[in-house]
Structure formats: structure tokens, C-alpha cells
Length: 177
Image 1 (cartoon, rainbow, N blue to C red):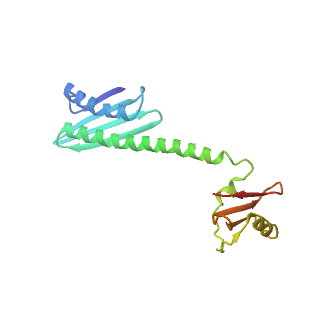
Image 2: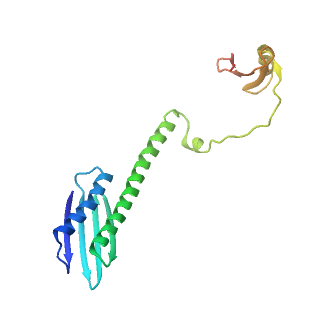
Image 3: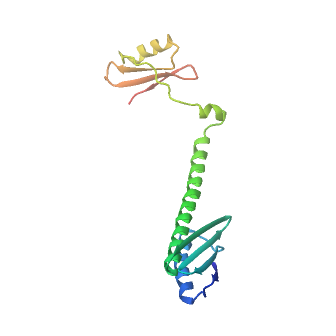
């Protein structure tokens, strides 16, 4: 990472440069980069010590500013603000990646359904009905006589819940647990 120092009414010492470098190394851990640029501006005005760090990474610009009675404290606070911004930016980018991958997985099986229909899809609760004990043959006869696509029933022989449904080929399917 390239770091540039500017001192206004103060000479930038080697100790201050080292202190700034240590804090900027945290940003290197947050971002995987080789081409990041940082500009550290230090300013002294009476008893106020200001530190401003401008950081450029790819197309993003981050800035951290702090003002205290001590230059080292100002530099530390400015670097902490910059680190929080960097973490927030990185989290936002990873969330966008995860969200786009999740949308791709959801959209993959939909070939002929329009996006309007998908966004309006919802669960509609139907009325409750009693599960009758029937044999699969009786359930098939009852389903033939109705407009429903499936029928939930209790198998008279096994006493277990089963589902019989109409298939597209005209036959009936049976689901037994």
C-alpha cells in the first residue's frame, strides 16, 4: 500500500509515520489489495491536533478524521473510524454477492414463469377437513369425482396418513410415508 504524509504546521516524524503505518496495516487485513492508497494529513493548531486519513481502494474513497490534544490519539481515532467504514463496506459487498447467488439459485428452476407471477406467489390457506379412513382404491374413486388435484386420507389398513394425487398422464400417484 502506498502511504503519503502531509504535515500542516507540524513536521511528520518517523515515529508518527510508524504509528500510522501500524494502524493502516489493519486495513490491509480487511481488504485484500495491492493497489490501495492512503493520504495522511496531520495538522496542529494551538492545542488542537487533527489527523485525517483519506483512503482510496478501487472505486471507493474512505475518510477518517479526529481531533484531540495528542497527535497519536488523533491518529488512532481517525484510523479506527476508517477501519469501521472499511468493515462496513466489505460486509456490504459480501452481502451483495451472497444475495445475488441466492437469487440465481431461486431463479434457475423457473423457465416459463414470469417475474410478476413469482413475486406475487403466496400461500393461501384452505379450509380444514376431516381425514377419512379409506383404502387407496376408495380414495382414487373419490378423487375422480371431484375437481381437486389431491386427497389426503388415512389408510384403512395401516392407519397411516397418505396422499393420492392426479398425474398429468391421467393416472393417479400415491404418497405413503
